[in-house]
Length: 334
Ligand code: NAI
Ligand code: MG
Image (tube, rainbow, N blue to C red; front, side, top):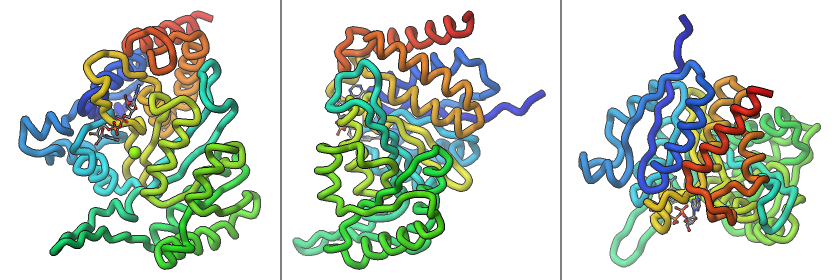
């Protein structure tokens, strides 16, 4: 008997639940040796149990082979940001890739953002006293080196050519300075990969005007959060943007988007980001072929215009997922 992989599934709030249902339909079609363990977290969970991230949920995540996460609402800082810290998933990988048939600003964009996930301004060290508020930014040599190596290794593994560091070391001389200096040092160990740097503000302009100059982007936590939404916007929106949170012991996969209260409950959220996040999970667990099959099916469905309204189609979330399943079955017959 083979040991089943334990996958903790956290649908969360709003469209998190809707896109998770869609992704699970696709995953179950693959019939893999996975045990899916559903756990709660988020705004609704907080209302029910008085805490947005119950101890049982955290424990289940720590004992899992992978976590599949939908999205939560206002409790995001206490749920997803906390989970990333608790699971020590120090690398947040966010690809932004053009899709055939998607009307976007540009075609042929193919960028991977590698965002440091456990330090920076999101550490939660905030204070307020007598009309003065402060947030402390923590950047460590160890944390910077770990994420820099991860980015260069990813570049090598994926056959990518260039790593670009985004920072603001001219103003934040200490924190960004340390990060950039460590990245420069690490780059010396990878002479086969081109290395360059931009200030974060200029990089935002380059991203909008000339996204092809980027391949792998390496940056700190908050800058990474912001530029990943920007990059998602370049290729057709948040409905298409998946992500992986990788650590030494744990891994969590989630769409970049949130619970989208403006469209929640309507059944029209694009499931692509969630399904692609599940594909990142499959690859992480060694099921590369299956992941590629799902990605191909999804690409074809999108190219045929069988999409949700955000991409100009008129399908519902589950209908789009059913189209993907149909494609997978056609593929199996072929
Ligand atoms: P959001 O990502 O939920 O939505 C931004 C915009 O993109 C909205 O117009 C939404 O309709 C659209 N959108 C997002 N995902 C989509 C999809 N799959 N298909 C079609 N359209 C999609 O970000 P927003 O509005 O800033 O935040 C809403 C809530 O989500 C907040 O309570 C926030 O705290 C939470 N949030 C949670 C995150 C997480 O759980 N990882 C991440 C970001 C926000
Ligand atoms: Mg974000």
